Length: 226
Ligand SMILES: *Cc1c(COP(=O)(O)O)cnc(C)c1O
Picture 1 (cartoon, rainbow, N blue to C red):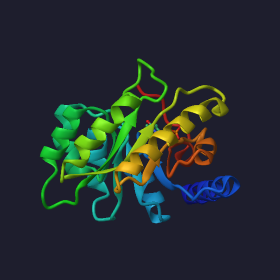
Picture 2 (tube, rainbow, N blue to C red):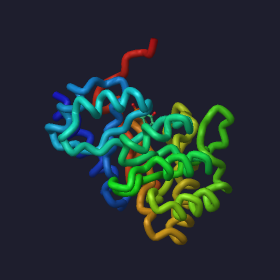
Picture 3 (cartoon, rainbow, N blue to C red):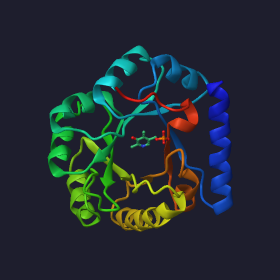
C-alpha cells in the first residue's frame, strides 16, 4: 500500500519534471512521526533517503533500521548542543543556518565517516517565526562550510511561507533558485536545491528543485502532536 504511494509519487515527480523541462528531482521521504515499520515498507519498495525533524526520534528509528543502507537527512531545526548526536547519525543536515552550528558539526563529525553533507537553510520570505539565514548571509556561511574538511557543502534548503495557494510560493522558489545559481558558481560541490513538499512540489520542480521533501503524500496525514 505504501509501495503504491511511492510509485505514484515517483511518477508524479517524473511528470512534473517532464512538463517543465527539468531533470527529475530526488525524493526525500519525510518520515517524522512514522514508526520504523512504515519506513521499512518504503525501504523495501526501494526508497533510500529519509528525512527526520528531531534528533532523538531519528536516533531510535535509525537504530531499528540499521544495516539497511538508508540515508538519513535532518530537516528540522538543530540546536548546537545536539550537534554531536546529529553529526554521528545523519548523512545530511539540511538546516545549517549559522556559523556556530558549522563549527559544532565539523568538530563532531568523526574522521572515519565521509564528510557530512550540509545544506544552508535560507529564510527566503524573511519570516520572523522561521529559522534559516538571510539570503545575504549565504556567501559567508558557504565559505565557512567549504573551509571545513569534515563538511561538504551541497546546496540550499527553503520552506517558503505556506500561502494556501502553492502558486503564491512560486516567487520564493524562483528567488531561491537564483541564490542557488550564484552559490554554485563559486562552489563546485554544490548540486542540491531542496524545496517543495506534498502540496507544492510541482511548482518547486518547475522552478528548479533538485530534491523534494514529501511526507503526507507518501505516508498519509500525520497524527496531531500532543
Ligand atoms: C514535515 C516537513 C516536510 C514534509 O511535509 P509534507 O507536507 O508532509 O509533505 C518537508 N520539509 C520539512 C522541513 C518538514 O518539516
